[in-house]
Image (cartoon, rainbow, N blue to C red; front, side, top):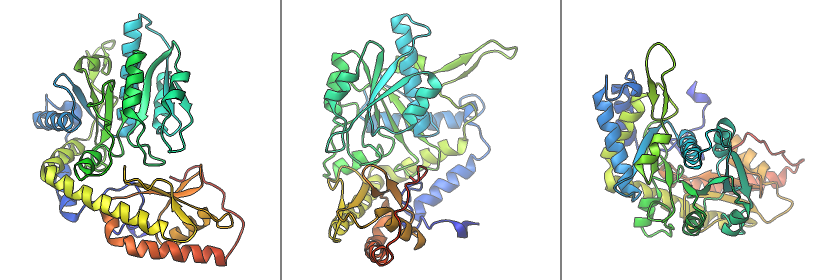
Length: 398
């Protein structure tokens, strides 16, 4: 059945998979297999080894993201759960502090925030207010300010945002959060395990983690550029006491108290073991190597795409490994170019506003840069030679 799939090892997939090399994949696979039957719900009771690994993962994340000694962290199944828990914690903490056990509140974010924020809002009864982005595809603190009211409980910022790969001005938003006594969550789910190492390599990564005053919580996916098996993510809190409002606990049944630190009950022990094993296997030097491969591929792709007539990248700034490229030729249908690339074995993401082709970059793409740029040129020539009706945007294309 895998013959039906796009070849992610050969850099044909724009996201979904995050591949550094076969050796790391073997470590990921072996560690997961060792714990394929164990349940993270029993960590600390039945499976003390999983508790030790989870605590170690949290400690490494707290250090990597410059969290204070009093910080807390939770291991989750992915970015959606991490952000869900940050919203749940903010809601319950706000209800506690305001003495409103059923209070309904809102979060203010830029329109570029990941849709899982709205998913969390729908499930938790929290309203999400989105403001337009700037010409540089970043959140505008002034617009965020005008959307705050007495029911606002949290601001939300992206580091980077997924559509454009740019960082919101976290420092300015942090000051706004402090001024208005609001929480601030920073979504580092995409680049959290890339940005610290890209920064060390000299790329212009703005400060976005707990070094920024006002940041209350932060999320980062280990199963992306931490190169662990899915699903593995962390959510961190500046104050460990906040986690009292993250936990779910219930005693109203015959069995006794049922309590979980995050949303999931049963949790894949393999995901914990894989994350722990890969983080130790790669270490700082391994992550620096992977970051260099990723950012080298990103910059080569940006340079090569910008060299193609009538094609330009929206964000050629090196802040992240997300690329979106559009066309300056109104007669060239960029979606038709994406369709042609997919026909030739290159899965592409599509941007709606503005119309563009979007992709994330990982180390697997470095070896295919020259081939891919040639394929883009051929796809453009093919579309120009076969002009047809514009292809409709597919809401389910990412």
